[in-house]
Length: 418
Image (cartoon, rainbow, N blue to C red; front, side):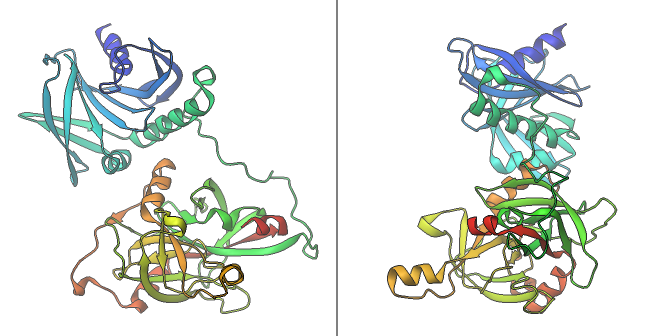
């Protein structure tokens, strides 16, 4: 009984320093040994947070939650703890024996320490298999096998409750996929004016065959979406998730397709003036059937109207480059090519034709998208020394194993919205 009572207490009070009394759970999160749901402020009835707990053999209950403001909380609870109210403690956590972080926790109740988790720690927590937590002389191990789906379910919980309210809370582990064309919907005849071939670029980001591209590349596709590496047969890809706001989409290759090589995402911000390499399939069918390679620099760390989600780049891109990888000089992903400034529209408005003003989505938005889709991507720290840089030919050679032509039959109406 003490375990059940402590689990409930932990769930109700996981929101650090914000809710003295909470009610719930509303809806459910049940993944492995993790249980939880949504909670409200018992005094006001307003939505407070979503949280889940898991008991461990070491006697500690791990609690993870996200409050209505978007902050993530990690708590350690045990009936044997005897903290003073407001007592502070530093907790060092190591994930999979590599990634390390220090959390600063507070005892908001006598049997639980709670700490805010920074975004980078949440991402690592979500992808890790093992966490070792050390505070003073106490060392505890936690199996995080189900942590990825739990984080995704809790993020879905907060999004759903804020949009629909607590009264419509349900199973938050069921994350709705973006609507796709019905399986039995036939593509328009090839000769029809309403149908046309669409193509773009994508790149593989995991050994499991997860492929990143732009939302606008697959938006309006009817029938199968296909992907193929240069010189290889096309494969049918499945849409996993799509984010129209950030112009990102995630596709999945068939499970029978192994990928030994895939892109690594740069773990440090790029700077204005840094050199970049863009790879893609522009004007496919008119130009070469192989991908093209262009080089340039990061012209600005923001896009149109100071949109901080984007980079402005001088590397030339054309229709068909959309969704392609943007590399730094060490061959790591620093962005997803998304488009170029409409030269004709700007010329009509200003009388001048803009040159080399192109855009890519930053890795921050990309990593958040992949985290929410529970993709086991890999990051890498760029080497600052010149000896760590690669020739453009080598970057292109490495990218050949995981850069794909993405194609489908689309509609003129869909293309007009792009």
